[in-house]
Amino acid sequence: MEKNLKFYWTLFKITFALSAFTIGGGYVIVPLMRKRFVEELKWIDEEEMLNLVAISQSSPGPIAVNTSIMVGYRLGGVMGSFVTILGTILPPLIIITVIAKFYAAFKENKIANALLLGMRAGVAAVIIDVIIKMVRDIVKSKNKISMAVMITTFIAAVIFDINAALIIILSGAFGVFYYNLYKEGKQQ
Image (tube, rainbow, N blue to C red; front, top):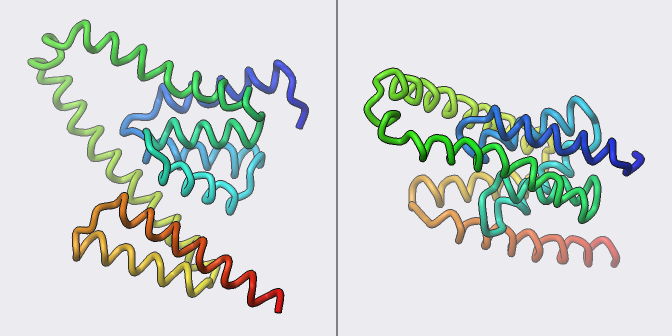
């Protein structure tokens, strides 16, 4: 893949369009990025995209921007990160600026409120779709450790109401520990 001006412009257009037409935040834009970069363009493979999303989610900041940084860097280095960040943050910046200007009119508008209510339902459906696909990928991998971590973290979050940040940190630490243990076992 040649990294020329046309490539960076394409990267910008993709992230700008995804960000401009995605309602619901990072958990909605990430699967659309996956679809575009993994399934359609085949610039990143499925496992690597899951890794990029995992790193993005465990880093401070919005997941959409973090994932853009990771995807941009993976595809085009530092310049790729800069281009994808710009493509991701410009649409919400423009839209929120316009909404802020006319907030009083939006706040009392019944059509705008009905539109937002419908959009929330659609966003929930998209998030559930992402969850199902990610679970399916983990189950397909037949990696018992990954499945155990997934089930354990689900129980920790849903039943015991443990903070998501703590769950992510502990899961990451376990992953490092397990990988190093597994790597050492393979070398012996």
